[in-house]
Amino acid sequence: MVFFIRLSVNKHVLNILDYMLPSMIRSYLFSFYKLSCTLAYSGKLLSIFCSRNSYLHWASWRLYFIALINRPIHAICLHVHRLGAHRDLILLRFLVSQGRKVFVRDFFPSALAFLMNGESEIVKNFILKTLRLQSWEKKIDRFHLGEGVMPASFKVLHDPVRNNETLIADFGESAIGRVAPVDSGFWWIILLRAYTKSTGDTSLAEQSECQKGMRLILSLCLSEGFDTFPTLLCADGCCMIDRRMGVYGYPIEIQALFFMALRCALLLLKQDVEGKEFVERIVKRLHALTYHMRGYFWIDLKQLNDIYRYKTEEYSHTAVNKFNVIPDSLPEWLFDFMPTRGGYFVGNVSPARMDFRWFCLGNCIAILSSLATPEQSTAIMDLIESRWEELVGEMPLKVCYPAIENHEWRIVTGCDPKNTRWSYHNGGSWPVLLWLLTAACIKTGRPLIARRAIELAEARLLKDSWPEYYDGKLGCYIGKQARKFQTWSIAGYLVAKMMLEDPSHIGMISLEEDRQTKPAMRRSNSWTS
Image 1 (spheres, helix red, strand yellow):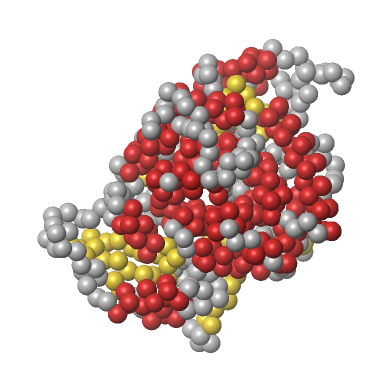
Image 2 (tube, rainbow, N blue to C red):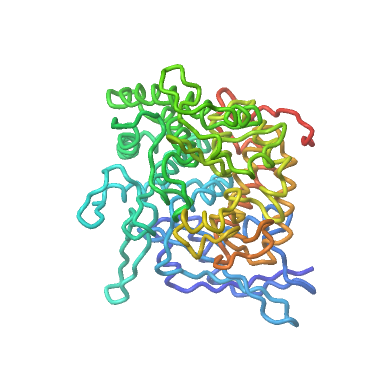
C-alpha cells in the first residue's frame, strides 16, 4: 500500500507563519510547500481523522488547524475534497481564512491538543497575544467596559495595498445583543494554568503582564456591590450560549468557570504584596461560593422531593425555602427525567426562579474543578448513564436539556429562528463537548462512558465533514446552519481520544488536590480496564 501526499501552500501562508511559529515548524511547513505529491489509498477515501493510528489523526488535524500567524493570530484551515470516483484522491490545502474570527473559548480544546502533543510554544504565543488585547480601549456606544474584560474574539484584516495586517478585537460591541463575554477571562486563566501544569514552565505565569492580567480579571469578579450571593450576576448570551436562551442571572456555566478560574489563580498568583491581597479575597470567595453552589444549585431525587413540598413566603432566618421557589413552577418533564440514582447542578438559581435544565459544560467543569463533591461527581455520571438517550442520543453531546418550545420558546428566545427546538443552543448536540465529557469520565473512573460516546461520534463525524453541531431530539441531523470542517469539533474529538490513550493528560485540567498526574479511579459498573 503506497501513500503519496499532495499539498498546496501559497507564499502568503508561509510569510504569515514566520513570526509566531517556531523555526522547526516553519521548516516543516516549508518542506511541504516544496513537496508536491498525491495521497492515494486503494479503493476508498482515506479516513484520516478517524484512524486509530494516533500519528495519522494527529497529523491530519494539525494541518487542519494552526491558529498562529505573523503578529496577529489566525486560522489556517485544511479542506478535504474528494477528487473524482476513479482517482480516490484527497487534496490537502492550507487556506488562510481572511476575516474569520478566532474565539478565545473556541481555541481552548485546540490548545489542549497542542499541549498534549508537546507543542507548547503555540499555546504560549496565544496566551500572550490575547493578553495584550486586554489593554485595548473597550467601548460600546458611549460606555466604557471594565479594564479587565478579555475579548470574546478577534480577527485579522489584511491591507493588500500597504501589505500589512491589523488585529481587530471584539469585546461585545460586535456580538449578538452587544453582550460582553464573561467567560473569556476565565478560559484564559484556566489555559494559563494548563500550560504551566503541562510544561512545568512557571516563567510565563510569573511575568508581570500575566500577573497584572489575572489581577484585572479578578478585580472585575471580586468587586463588591449589591449582590447578596457569591455567584456572578450575568446577562443572557455571555458565554458559549451566546444568544438569548434564558440563562440570564446566575448561569451554571459561568459559576463553574468562575470557581475553576479562582482555584487556578490561587496556584498562579505570586506571593507579593498585590498577589497576597488577591489570594485572601479568593479564599473567602471560594469558601462562600462552594457552600452556595453545593447547597442551592444541586438537585437529586431527595432535593426534588423537598422542593415539591416547599412552603412559600418564609421571611425568617430559619426559612427552608430561601429563594421562595414556588413548587408549582416545577416542570413536568423533571419528574420523569430525574433518576433514582443521580443528580446534577441546575442551570440557574435566583429569587423565585430555578432553571432546572441540564447544561453539559457547567456540570463537567464542576467535576473537573472539584466544585462537585466526589459523591456529586458520581451522581452526575450516574445521570448521564441512566439518561443516555436524552443527553447523548446518536451524537454526543446535548449542550442543554430539554429544548424549550412553543409559547415558552417565543417568550424566552424572542422567536429566535436559530434556536428552534432541538437545534443549536436549544437542545442541539455539540461534538466539541466530547473532551469535557471524557475528562469528567476519567476523573470519576468511568472511562467506558467516554469510549461509548466517542464511538458514536466516530461513526459520523468524518462522513458528515465535521459539523459544528447536530439537530434533533437524538442528534440525528446535521445542524441546519452548522458550519462544516469545524476546528473545535475536530479538536474536541482529538483531545478526547488522546486523554483516553494517556489519562495522565487530565492533570492539566483537573484540580483535584494531591493527584498531580493521574486521578484516582473510582471503580463502578461502567469501568473497564
